Length: 66
Image (cartoon, rainbow, N blue to C red):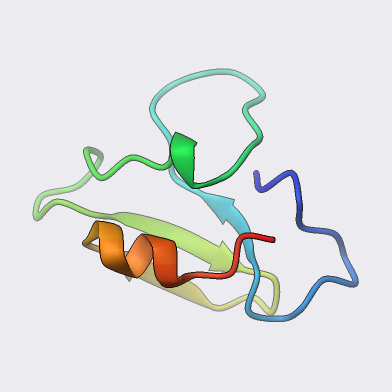
């Protein structure tokens, strides 16, 4: 879970995202993993309910995290 995202945050802010296995994680893009899928990539849930599949570091860092 993105620690910076709240209910009244912008609709395009990342709320949830894929990480490696672990319990009760929260933080930012440093926790994101591309290793859960083939082809390589991971899902993010934006604050407005949109889900995106991210394949590159460039796409990941282009998202709103704060």
